[in-house]
Image (cartoon, rainbow, N blue to C red):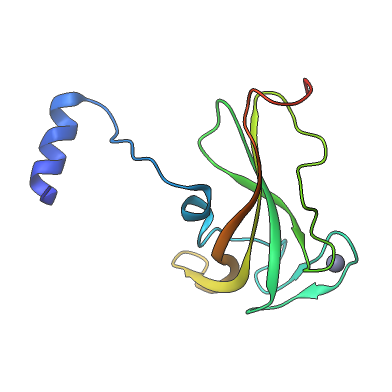
Length: 130
Ligand SMILES: [Zn+2]
């Protein structure tokens, strides 16, 4: 669909277009780490650098649009499953490498997730109430 047709479609239907994507696609390029150039493994505290193999725990509440990636693990500390799934939340573990992305507003590179593969997944209907 050409861009003009796409805009017309959205105007006519008064809704955002929705596409289906895999978790690995959604989280590719997602900024991670508390500081622009630093991230650590939450298991052992090892610093994680660009190109390192990393695993990330990500979740999204049922009514949220954004994914949150609060935990990163090194290769040795990565869990193989979601340890305590939460009801109403989509949770997943992905493995990949750290890359960098340059966001236009802060004008500085940030670490991000790249080359991801899904390792574990917990749908919203699974787990204990939060
Ligand atoms: Zn570790």
